[in-house]
Image (cartoon, rainbow, N blue to C red):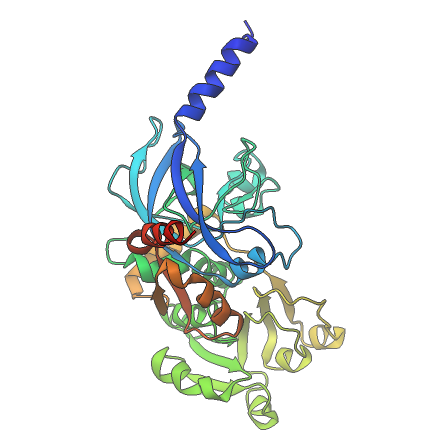
Length: 377
């Protein structure tokens, strides 16, 4: 028997009564200014995990989203897809997590969970994949990200932080880490002794260097900034450094690399970079230039080279990435900030003034920032 309108309304009212109050840092318009906002999270479903957010990394995508650079913002936007925290509640069907567990949530919080990609563990390729923020979830609600006090997420899209990994330094791996780990795995750029080029030394690039070394590879950083050479070699452990604007250095590195992870989001000449690859070499793009890239066909065809792309990774691979990172001591280099500093951090991020990831100390500063904002209104 179909439920009556009265019964349906009563069920909706009951669900509403059990929604969870939270506070987030929200952009209300394309100015991108973030300020505290009271929000609600959905009630705990049978398959859901409720997480108290302790830390959240700041990704460059967050900056694009709050300023509506991609013309898809639905305000208010509460960004953040590098979430680290602690389980406070688990639905009755949840088997993998319990209260007190250290967990994380990355770039997605749902998918159709039934298509071929989902069945194979590639939820990131699902046509119905739901991003962690600025998307409409399957229940019709707008998703809010990790610049907030808590979140409710389906168990499938939650990962466990290994005991050896600090949550603040581990949080950025949920985006930056899987973004570079996945293409290295699936394009065979994880073999000891291979020569890996990492183009760009920022939030993604510095983690790619660390994973390359964890895989036992020779790693060369390719950058237009000569000033980054010392930290690439001494701080991050790269084996070599090539200044992309130096013709002599580029010539000396010709045909030496098995693969290149391209983390750059700027439009740059591609042909010289393909010249760095050995025959059958691969370049995998994980950065997103604003304009179409120009690829000279001869640069690929002549020596059987490949240009590919990669977008984050599935949940199984994300857990695998965290476990391997903990085993080898791979974490992000971070600057921990308070919630009250987030707008200044965004200004600095726009100028690439961070080494290499801002992480918001949500647990210790968000409520204070919200209270201070209320006082000054």
